[in-house]
Structure formats: structure tokens, C-alpha cells
Image 1: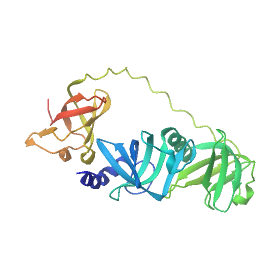
Image 2: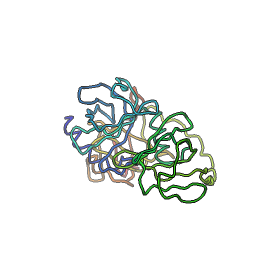
Image 3: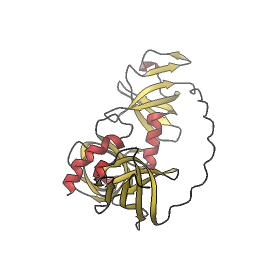
Image 4: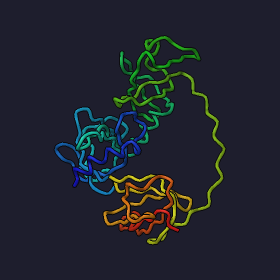
Length: 280
């Protein structure tokens, strides 16, 4: 059964992919259930998922590159998986705090001092004390004293700079832009009015909403209802009914109105027992 699940996982990866432009890449939070000789068994979605690491797997812990032994059973991590293989291969793994740090470096300007450089990489010592290596190329946008500079050779160790990265398909972080003056502060968007505080859902009941997405291989149904987005786990015994009779989870389309009967399990997840399309 697990092999079929892993093969089907690739079908939904596009809907769950994150910033990395790699095809069929899934980025998700997970818990390590077991460390194996070939990788890990992770808790993802509704059932365990075995993944294999490779010599190219990137590992991050405590805001720096890490060894395989940095992650043990029970670790809460963020993983980047290639789901075009069976079993999936692990492209990157990081503890959750480090993943937040990585996301910031790969999307925003960060301040630091140039520690070293070579023909391929520029290493910055960031303000938080961590070091980070950017993949620098002749297409990196470099600016000193408000003027473009020609080459990386114009950058000297010890210079205080602001760098902005961009994640490459190789999982290197490309130096997209570097400058020795702070970037312009973007005006903040007007603060949205506060929404009324939502009441918690009962432990069991029924509700009506609109389907946002359905992931058959993960047995997950995303529904917009009562001013919030809810995620329902649909066990094998869950019944799906349409106007003409029973249907499959695969038959649920985004935008459909549904009435969901549910209960919470011991872990607080919402388990659907029946889903009726177009129910009053």
C-alpha cells in the first residue's frame, strides 16, 4: 500500500510546491519517526513516508550546514523532497528555526560583513553571527556608493554590505544583488482591519463550505467555511456523495459547495466521515 501512496504523491506535489523552481518538489514540515541506513521515515500527511538521502542532500541545523547525525528520531524538521522518485529522495532538511532563517536569506536583503570570496562564492558574516555562502556570478547585481561595479574583485573582506539571495534549482543561494548602502525601505501596506475572533469548532458536527482543493493521494480536503480555511483528513471509510449518488474524492472540484460531517481525533485533526456535494 505504501508504494502506491508514494507513486501517487507526485501527482499532488505541484499544488504543494514551495519557492524552489524544481519540478515535482514538495516542501513540507515533518517529524522524523525513524532514522534508517538509507534515509528517514517521516510523519507527513496521514501516514508515514520513507525517504532516501543522497550525497547531494543539503542539511542545515543551528543556522549552518550540518552532518547527517544532526537529526534524530523525534526531530521536527522542514524537508524538501524530490517526489519524482519512488521512494522520494531528500534534497534538503533543516530544523524549523533554521528553515525560517534560510527563507529570509533567500528572499530578502540581509546585512553582514564580507568574510571571504573566491571565483564562485561570497561568504558573509551576518549580523546574527552566522556565516552564509552565496553563489556569485557575473550576473549578480553589485552596487557600491550608489554606482554599479564591474566585478566581484571590487569587493573586499571586511566591507559592510546588504545582500539579497535567490534560490537556485541546485539549492545554492545565488547572490542576486549586493550593495554597501541600506536598501530603500518599502512602504508598509495599510493595516487590514482586524477580523472578528473566530470561535473554535465543536469536537464533532457538520458544516457547509466551499472546496478549495482536494489531494486524493494524501486524503486531504481543504474547505473554506465560516470565515476560515479548514483541512479535513478523509479516512478510507469517508463517504462522498453527489447529486447522482456516490463519488470519489478525486471527483471533488475547487469551488464546489459541500456539507462535511466530521469529528476531531486525539491529535486534534479534523476527520471527515461524509462529504455531500451541493448539500443544503
